[in-house]
Length: 483
Image (cartoon, rainbow, N blue to C red; front, side, top):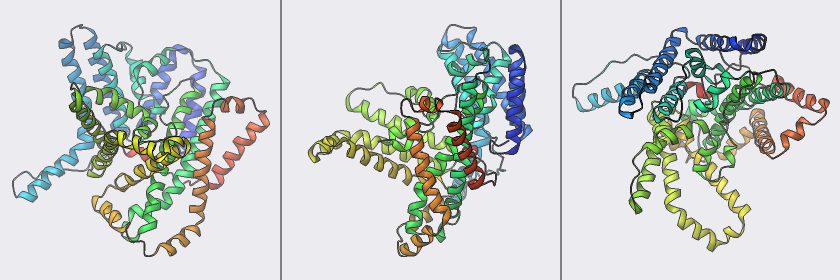
């Protein structure tokens, strides 16, 4: 069931109405049933995977809680890691590795060709796997207590607003909320509706419109050159942002209708002044998950220059894993590797750049320096779109090869400027970025809330009007559902 579907527009109000109608002690059962129904609408068989991940993580945590010594906890941890990562590997990465082995076998003539049949990737498996793993690791480390109520824990894993594409929640934030008695709060309900409307606007009006411009370039790169590809690269990153942050807004808003608070997953990433800053603002719950459970777990006990190089190597390894989390393909591995290399090069060159800024006078012009850093970051992130938007390495090479051909730039620009969807997309992008910048200013939301009802309703109706008139209603899936 897609958020941008008629089914969800029926499912959500019914669930919220029943939630407030039921006594507090029965609400978790409603939410759990609704969450399993929500997930089963994609493929009912994959509910078994979700139940398996839930059951294994639940019992592993209880098993660890029965012991105080880590050596006795460790077998339970390994059971949870093996089962959860094993399912993720089987459904998401097995094809990649069997293809790699078969390719090497064909190349060398050695035996080893492995037949493999394509399996439909269970929606949300990358997200709920990380959420369950974070839980069992926290219990193992002693920073979280195991949840003894099986139903509450199952709801923590399956809570429908964030089940299929995050935010990836931590036990300390979400689990306690299921035991709280949420009374109807008009302010929270209105906030939820605003977030849902804004998320729908970003997805249906902005992201899906940009997709119409970008998909032909990535789908048939041999027909596009120079300026067309150069413009498609940043448009892809903006499309993914509008799509994924739009999903996140709908998820957070849906939960807010019932009084729950989900974690913020985006913080104006295009205002980032470095690639590291970008990842502090983009898909925040994934970045912090990998920081806490992967990066800090890698060897780093060195001194002097060795320590600096080791930390940079850990950074590269972690972001290569970020790429691999996105998909079992060389393109995603390279995408993650590039981000890790960008951050490593920034770390290594920091003393040189600071000296250059002082000598050039840029340090005395902080506004200009900030703008230049933001522009450079955006260009670097956009350049990785060569790999992020493609599942075919051959198509990626075609894009890279064709971007150097600017022979038909004038014709291409005229065609773009005559395309109403291109012009409207540019206007909408500026509006989205400007609006979110204003919304983050201290006091902006409070000032809006204090406005007369007529002003607020006029704003809501205007956005709804734009959504209905300019929306692309082809029911495209959210971009991150493929991960």
